[in-house]
Image 1 (cartoon, one colour):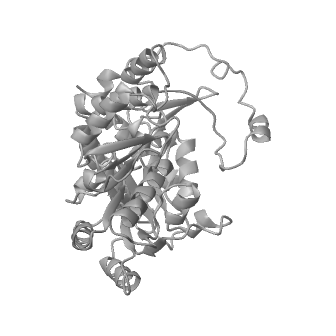
Image 2 (image 1 turned 90 degrees about the horizontal axis):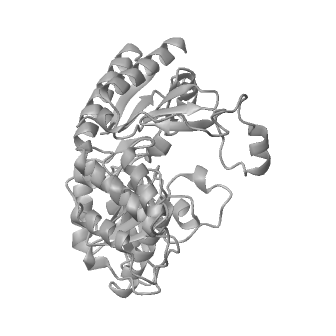
Image 3 (image 1 turned 45 degrees about the horizontal axis):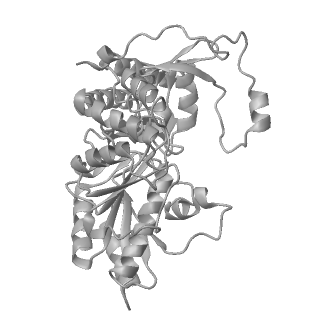
Length: 425
């Protein structure tokens, strides 16, 4: 079944934003909402498939997807049905009781990954917090490490909480929030020597390295894929030293790489991995998954009031089942190859500006040369004016993360818009 076949035409909607005769009052918005985002001057009113419409009725091709979150695009009928059915049945109940939808989602994730157990929360940052806590408890209770350290990579991104911005190897996210959490040490991504040097230094007198936490592909760090040899050597080191390997799959997981999980592109299995973003297709949910060998949490060790509620789990299970039923991994692989081919053609046309195209599946980066006067935010504004929404991954990388249902025609349209943007800049 083609992706287009499962997206019906939506009826006209009655809504104050859609019917607004004038642009939305952003000044009033800014008066009441904290300025934690530098927002584009764009107000989205509704979406369908891979398309969005603003309050002026203008149409956009969405290659942001809520930053790799809207797995099935917008207003997908399977999600509409799941949301409608579950909200009329049971939307929340405490984790003091059994939640069947949570158990069903955990089963699906375990059966489609290397994990044995799952814990549910509300976001990627929370999932990574849980992974950090699990690794620390494992270090204390199993390896008897008094002062555990987790290795993470420069240019990584693991979240916005205090622990996860410390894990994040980018000073720009940490500025103004010191003192940071202790227990983290940064290494260079895709450089095995820095891993080996760090372990030798930290474990010189007594073992301290508890875990190595890495993204299978660095998303915010510039759409930088992990190298197979690098990750396989890390897996070997972890096995030899009883160090836990944690994969942050928040952005690259849930089929975005062309495989269900990013680590599958690397020929390894992590001990722990995390998911969020695309898991709920836009409904907030996060998951911490692990092998039974490191499942050391006991009642009271970790919790989440909203985590694993029936509403979020029912929708997430629908997303998972739809990916499988509609063979969306095949679409991701084909459309990803098509997108990269189109972007490489642009790179050949503008070699003075573009250095390379990189990525997996439907998470791809168009990398600008450092010496180019152009920046990714500048190109994002140019493509927005042409009706294509993109998002930067740093100042010199243009990121493409459309919904997994994107069609061949929509890929062609996006490539054309990017080419026009370069031609006009």
